[in-house]
Image 1: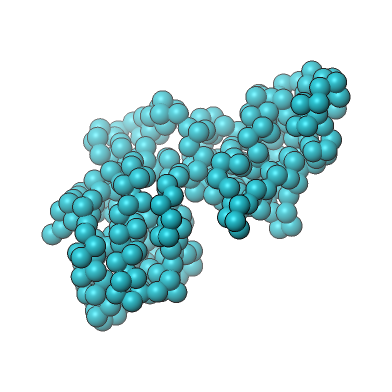
Image 2: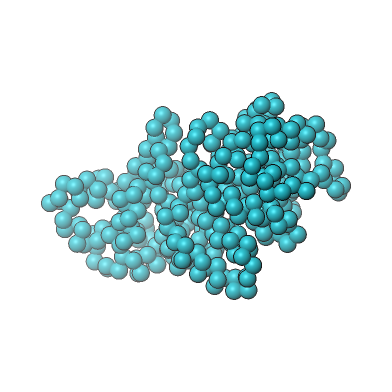
Length: 326
C-alpha cells in the first residue's frame, strides 16, 4: 500500500514507471474488481477536484461529468464513476476511503505551492512517456510556467467564518482530520464558485466592462468574483449558487460590498446619494463612478444567468440601506 511519501515526495522516475504501467494495463471490466489507483492517478483526481464537484453526479449521471473527468477516465482506462468515487475518497465523503489518502488531500489542498509542484512532476512525467496534451490536458495550466496555483475568491473567506460554519453545520464532528477536510472543502467550494461566476460573466466587470488580458492570457486579480449575499450569511446551497455572485473590478467590488453601489431587480445600477453628489466635482471619483465608465445596468453577456432578485434585495436591504438613490 502506498505511503504519504509516495504522494508528497513522488519522483520523476517513480511517476514515469506508474504511467508506463497505466499505458499497458487493460481496460477495466464492468463489474470486475479494478486495479488499485497509482499515486499519479490519485494526485490527478485530487487536482481535478479544484474544478469538478463530484457531488453533482450520481451513478446514473457519471457519464455527464465535466472535464477533466472524462479525459482522466479514458487515460486511466476506468469509467467516469471510478474517478468520481476516488474524488469522494479524497475529501472524506465516502466512508470507506483510505485515511492516508484523506491526509494527502488535506495536506496538499492546504498547501497550493506543494500541490502545484506535485502536479507538474506528474504531468511532465506523462509527457516523458509519450502521453500528449490530447490525452492528458494541462487542466490547471501549470505545466509550462512556474506560476503559482491560486485558489480564487479566498479573500472573501475568513478562517473564523469557516470554522464557525463547520461547527454549526457539523456539530458532531470531533475527528481533527475530518474537520480539516471540511474546512478545505469550503475553500475549494469557494474557488469553484468564483470560477463559475467569472465564466458566467465572460471574465468582465459587470459594472464597467473591464476585461484585462496580457499576451492572450487573463491578468490575475484584475477581476473579483464575490457573493452578493455574503458567504458567512448564506446557506451552504446559496454559497455555491452562481446567481449569488457578481464579477467586478476591485474598485467596484469594494464599492458594492460596502454599500456605495447596489443593483435593483431590473439590474439597474444605483449609486449612493453621498457618492453621487461628489462624482462630477472630483475627477478621480468620476473616473470610477461617472457614467461612463459605470454602466446604467449590469453588463451581462448573452446567455449569462442573471443574479437572482432574492440576493439583490438582500443586498439592498442589509448593505446599501439608502432608499434614495439615482
